[in-house]
Image (cartoon, rainbow, N blue to C red; front, side, top):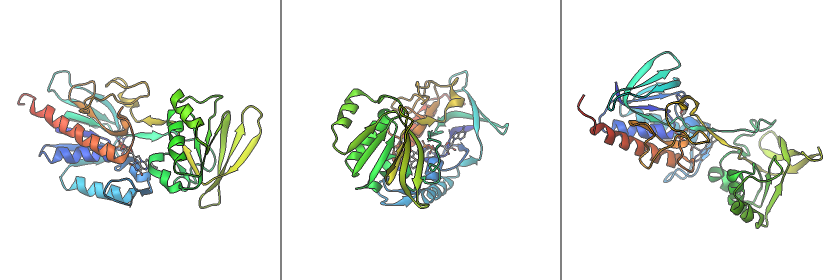
Length: 310
Ligand code: FAD
């Protein structure tokens, strides 16, 4: 059996695997895609100490770093069920879609998350060419430009406030007839001179010139009239979905499906840890996922050295 079995090979999982393997214990990683969301990322400018890198390049470096420690990486494998050990110190069982079963003394869940997309024409075509999902990552690229934020919940309103300090103008589009963000955020938003809020606005298309975003169309849901506006960036903020459906009956999840973890990355089940975007830890970023993955791994090691000798 594995001493530490990591499920998910994004930055959280890679960091967890490296920290575990450096303890000289038997470490495995099961992942659908090695690299996770970083594979879909173009420019990365907030990976601290590296001024600029690209997603695929960072993933190749992560892969090489993990390989250096002889971690057993099982890529292109999807986990579909986890059965925790019934006795303290017993083995947890991970069932893969391929039919295989893996056993481990501790498990680190780092299956990440995915951004909910609008599903309108132009969104996919202009992804990373003006369409983005991460204000912390891409805000500075739009310095002095016009952007839209889609979504009037907390993340959309926070994004609009954040961006208003960087860009020339922000238009926030909310589908419903009112914003859903906390009142204090709404007050802050409405106090900003370079923000326009549109309610009942259904985004219908992202427009571009073939290379980059040039505008957006939306339908006013009260009149049915379609409007067009020129802008350079579209920040989609309509939700982040954790990849945790398969864990619903295994570990405690928050109301939005995030794995509940304590400060050590412990889940509700002894010997099962979690890290990164799949968890309740706030702020979904690469350096944070790596820090949390490292922490969960050290916590798993702490747990292992307290188990009775097998
Ligand atoms: P993920 O990266 O989501 O990795 C999860 C892994 O788990 C994946 O490999 C997936 O295949 C695997 N997996 C999921 N379910 C299963 C299963 N059932 N069985 C097996 N494997 C499974 N952050 C920054 O700090 N800077 C940026 O510039 C930046 N830009 C971004 C740009 C884009 C387009 C996107 C989408 C995100 C960006 N982020 C950025 C956010 C950052 O990528 C995430 O915070 C980070 O990747 C989270 O790491 P993670 O390991 O928790 O999860």
